Each structure stands twice: as C-alpha cells, then as structure tokens.
Image (cartoon, rainbow, N blue to C red; front, side):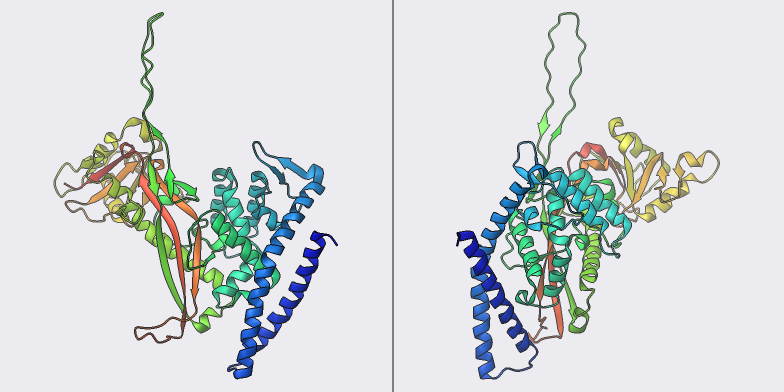
Length: 481
C-alpha cells in the first residue's frame, strides 16, 4: 500500500471515529446534569476528540495538497498561466464556492476569482439591498486587480461558512459542526492569518462578506456621503501608502536651446488604519433566532456608518481617522466669513473663488442640512435664482453654483464664531482606507456589575479603518469669523 493510500485509509478511520465521538457527545448535551460516571465519560470523549482532530489536520492537509496537484495536472487544457505567476485552475462550475481548497491555496487566477465573487454577490441573501450589491460589484470590478477581495468574499460567503458562523455565534461548539462546516471555518481562519488581518490572539470569526460593513454597507444611520464622494481604498496591512506629485513646470524654448529638465516633486502620504470596535448584547432567547447573522450584520453596519459619519468629518486623527474638517482647520485652506458672526451670500461666492481652478471641475459642497436651508434663502428674490441653487430631483444631488451638494450630519449647524460651516473641494483628495474583514467574538455569558449572569449573550466586533486628506489645497472651508 502506497503512502498516499495509507493516509486515506487512516483519514477514513479517523472520520468514522470522529462521527461516533461527536454523536455520543451530543447525547450528553441533552442532559441537564451529569453524574460522576457520565462526567468522566464526557471528559474521555472530549480528550479523544481533541486528539483525533489534531491527528487529522496534517493528514488532511497533505491529502488535499496531493489531490489539488493531481487535479491541476489532470485538467490539462483547463489550466491557465498568469503573467509572472504559477499555473492556476480555471473554474468550470457555475457554483462560485466550488473547490474552495484551491481558492484558499492560491491556485485560482485573479480573473476567475473576480468572476466567482461577482456570482457570489448575485447570490447574496434577499435582505442585502440592490444598491449594496452594486457597490460590492464595483469594488471587485474596479479595485481588486489581484483578486484579494474576491478571495475573501469566497472564503467567507459560502453556505457552509454561513451555517458554521451562525452556529458559533449562537454559542455552539465547533466540534458539533459537520465536516463541510468545519472545513469552511478552517479555510476562513487560515485566510484570516494569511492576509494578516490581525494577530487575533483571542480568536474570533470573520463576518460573512454580505453582512460585513467593510465590504457592503447595510445601515442607514447618520447621513454621510463621505464614502460616496471620497476615494476609498482597501488594504490588507495596517497602513496605506500613496503617491502624490506637484505639477511639472512648462517652459518655452528657442531653437536648439537646452531644456532645464524640471522634474515633479513626489510625496509619499501614509494613512494608518485604526481599530474600531462594537459590543452587542441580546437575551438568550433572542440569540436563538435563526436570523442572527442578518440581524447582527445590520446592527453592526448601522453602528459603523453612524460613527464613520462623524470621524470622516471631525475625527481627531489620534487613535481614529482624521476628519476632513480637522485636517483643514487652521491651515491655508480656511476662508473667513466677510463679517464676524454672519453667513451671507458673498461668503458662498468667495469660497468658490478661493478654490484653485484645477480642482473646480470635480468639486462638491459639504455642509449640514441647516446650513443648506440658510443658503437656499439666498436664492430668493428677482433674478435667475436657478443659477445659484438648482434642485434636479430623481435622486440627483442639488447643485450650488453648478456643483453637487452633499449633506453631512457631523458638520457644524450654527453660524457661530469659530464654527466651520461650509466646505468645497475635490473629495477624491480625501482617502478612506478600509482594512478588509470584520471579526466577531462570541461571549456566551454576560455578567453585570456584581459579576453575576444577566441572562444575556454578547458579541464583540472589531475592524480597522483610516482616513485623511492627502492634498489640502484641493479644498476650501468656510470659517465663521
């Protein structure tokens, strides 16, 4: 018998015994109290389960590797070679979650990963709205050249992973899962470590991509257009490193005159990601709801959107993203109102005139609704008021002096000395950095101030995000003098 055959025989023996051990353990799960003999037997089974799983893992990994290599060779003409890369397997099945072991091992090409991910997005549960699916599709199509985001989606979105995630978030144990669910959890955990999403010393499970707010936004929360108008990038490290440059100088030369050889000046802005967290509790009865994944996803998405609506505008930059107002305050981009403590129509025109011409074609306005209501009043009276303010309707942003307006709930609402009430700029020069992946840990027993159970369970979720202005000259902000 060959070594490969011996491995398969031993795996079959382990799987058969594992099924018996799990079945016997589940019988104990139905008992309220265990006597001494039952407790001793439970401990024996638990120890045997741990030993068998530890023995099985390296054998299964070796068998999967051998099978994967053999399958790749057997496919022959179905292999594809990417430039500067290894042979990769091209999907022939319409199931986006087929052959996840090959997805995890990096044997599926980037183009096929993206195609699978787009199919997976189409197959999202019904509670994921169409606009969220569209945003996720654009993320894959435009911002995932290497297929890293697509791989994350595939390893955290399949039916087996969904069942496993709901099980562990409801307080279930991993050993109670079937082989498919355990494999899905293992693939996601290995992916979690491989992309270095976090050291995760306390464990935790990646949120399925279709309820992961770092990928799909489900919550309404505060009104914040920043993710719509800013530049959003995804990273798998702690810091985003960009590249900026000044304009190249143009010169006029006579015949045979030597050029001065002016070169642009390059900069390397860096934006760190910061860890944000949320703590959710629910009664034991509510936690038993089979729709727990969707409910937690919506709650986390709304909490995340509400906090980001604030920090992307006024965040301090210390342990959290730096908001656009914070980044510009006190700098050369600030324009004072003409009259102290007063907001007038001339201030709008002055702010527009102060923005450098090269940023005007892509500029947008940002203010609170209260400031926009005051601004609308400037358009009353005789004359072509539509040239000052235009309501276009049909979900199209209104326009102020021909540029779209966006509402930010975190912007100052009162015309008070010291407040920053109106912002105009090219918001592609504000960068939001998402580190893909939200992790959730389950706490089976929440205790109160006296360290006694409250009859609740809890979930601790955390993710990383950053934000900052990379070119302050692309903005002008109105400050009430």
